[in-house]
Length: 198
Image 1 (tube, rainbow, N blue to C red):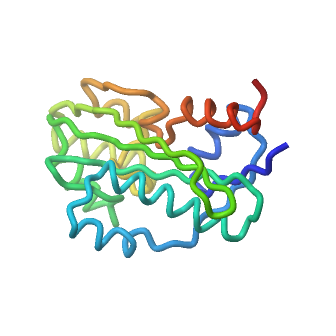
Image 2 (image 1 turned 135 degrees about the vertical axis):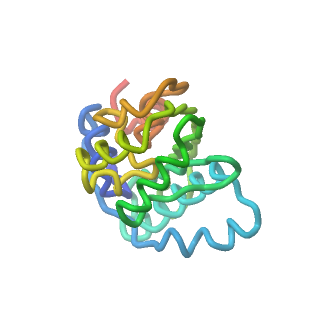
């Protein structure tokens, strides 16, 4: 069997691949994402392009330490009003971010890249569109009190599979993309490679 490595410590991505029946190891990349993306943002990279670049950078980094392994790198970015938002640093920033997104539509871009021996074999990026309802500031306070620090672990301050679903009026796109991993295209590629059963 192919040695599979997920270049991430994301509990959600680990769970998605485990639940799909994959046998793999998780090894987070040792890159500074914010430093890597600074020149790209200055040159006008879109949020979608950034997700793809970072997914590939993570996979390439982990591939260096795992010769022969098929390394899966992933990233997700949030695009809103021509800007790219990042995970909030604290609860005050999470509150401001949610209030800025309420009543409006934002895009989640999830990217995946597969690398072996430093060579990118495949990449994919998918986008989902999410429209938040026009909730009150009081609701945001109650929501953040209920979810706690989990709000800081997501670029949008929510986990759609949990209480975060209450923030939304409308969602367009693949569920796995929203969770941060274009899972169905990835499984298709892994089957083509003989890394999982057909």
